[in-house]
Image (cartoon, rainbow, N blue to C red; front, side, top):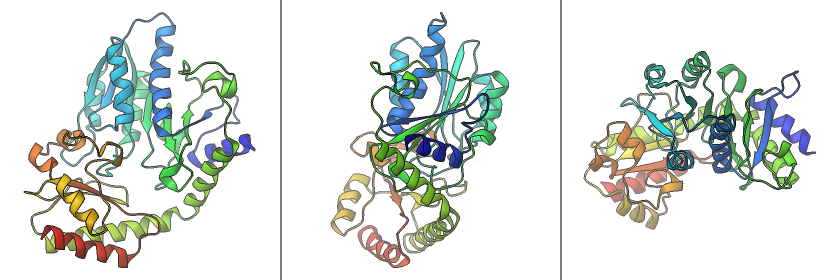
Amino acid sequence: MLEEARRGVAEILGADLDSKQPDRVIFTSGGTEANNLAILGIVHNAMSRGDSPGHVVISSIEHSSVVGPIEQLMDEGWDVDALPAASDGRLRHEFLAGLFQKDTRLVTTTMANHETGVLQPIAELAAVCNKARVPLHTDAVQMAGKLPIDFHALGLAAMSISAHKFGGPPGVGALVLRHGEELIPQQFGGEQQDGLRPGTESVALARGLWTAMRLAQEEQADCADRLNSLRCHFETELRGKLTNIEIHGSTAPRLPQTASIAFPGRDARELVKLLDDVGIACSVGSACTSGSDEPSPTLLAMGVSTELARASLRFSLGRTTSRREVDMAIERIVGVCG
């Protein structure tokens, strides 16, 4: 049953488990563990070949679950460069090759940003990496289940996903690993999953991930179209009723369910509380870092001023969100912010 789930996930994501050089799907506790396993595992494998700490490239708009292991590598003596983003939230892929050094061991970047929803030029980044023979890991947690992903067509070395982002159970995710890419495990004491992630796997959680992914895939196109229409309605109506708002990343391709909106002159933390009082759930930055007092690193990397970043909120639509709920949210947001 576990192997069936593994194969099902691989098929949906475009990984190949049946060739003479099979890819691998490693089940984890979620996206955070998958990111840590990929980043630390790949670069520590380079050191196991006798290399001293070298160089890695991260994007300037990463989630904290990617920034954390990168900071750990910096403590170990690794050099880090950040790929910049343009004002629309898209990474400047044309700058990547210029960041490479002789000892660059990994590039890691998000597939779709967790705050703005902006889709990143992953195929272009992967082409640069593959030409230089540098593995590219991508955090696809926001993208998986929302829009199609083809692991092989994109040319990726490693990719992280998390089940709860597409309606699956919390506490399970996966790392997809290209054939030939080696990892040093970050946990020890068992031989499960080739020893790369030891510990007894939860069959129920793995099958829950696969089932949720399969269901999300079946309705993906219709759901994406519906949510994109709702988000456009949401943003258009707010723009018409609150003329001074700014929508981050609105000129770039985005996930259908995410809107990052600035309310100039307002304090985002105060707005979160006021909106919560009228039944509107939103967050300052990503939900995972909503307790931080710092302005969004993603927005700052896009050139947004500190003042405007501190006035920005993230809104998300869900699979079951209705037009009536969106209209109600618009009315209440305007009532609080107007």
